[in-house]
Image 1: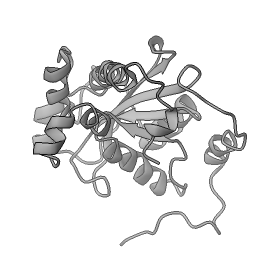
Image 2: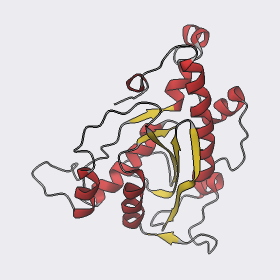
Image 3: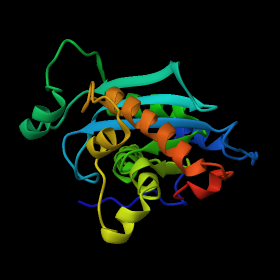
Image 4: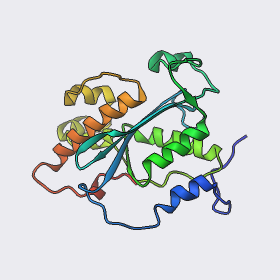
Length: 221
């Protein structure tokens, strides 16, 4: 049975109210003061509506520096299992190597970590969708954070390719090759978050060049 997204007439859960309250203040943010949260999810499949997260990895980036001391990584208990997906990310239904939490615990902890930060991901719409549908299952509205996508931003740096093949979609592996980034820990949520953070910094450097790039020019919402 289809359950519609949160209605404004509903009273959101307390954990979401605490998260949303942080957005009431309107502070001016620029690249130097912005707190970026680079994140990735590993999931049971590629349908954000029907599939669920298995792990979340996230890193904080401020002032053009990755803050490794401020990171987030959780594994989620599995109600669904896909052998095809497990062959890629290696997350099994039962694995004592990882301490697993419930989806509710993971979502609440993730909201506390991200705060009002700007979310950054590769093909970020899928990861945002995964979180939003998890919020929906908890009776909460969608994420309020601004976000951007390294795949979209990278296309802005390759003008010739955009002219000859404007529909080309760049994978994270493509970015690793094009930007000379190691693929260590690829297809692990934290590993992909770190790769995406490196790509984001290199892409920003290209976009800025000798001109001043405004934060609003890279946001997608």
